[in-house]
Image (tube, rainbow, N blue to C red; front, side):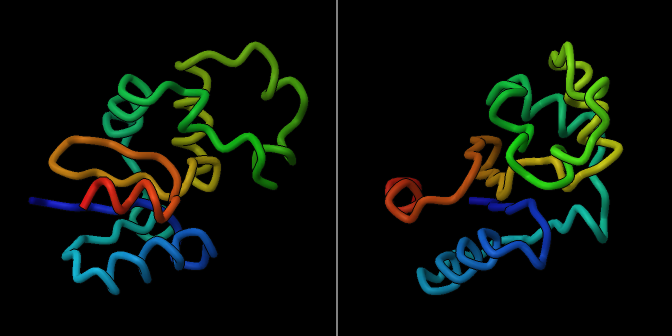
Length: 114
């Protein structure tokens, strides 16, 4: 199984998820949005599979700092554009297991996946 975990190196939730994967001996590739960016094709696939409401991290400081006009009338297209421009707005982590996607980290959910 090919496993890729997407996120930001310094994120506390990412650290917990990576520590969990390491402790369980799960081999994975880590894709850092800050260092490597993220392409619109991946964002569209995630939004199609999980919904833009799940993929867009509206609770984070990056989203909250946006001008009100950017936060209004959100839809999938606008959310993808925002996340592409500022990857910090993407929910972390996004876990891709051979195309099966999971957003966020909860140890009990990861237990069922591996």
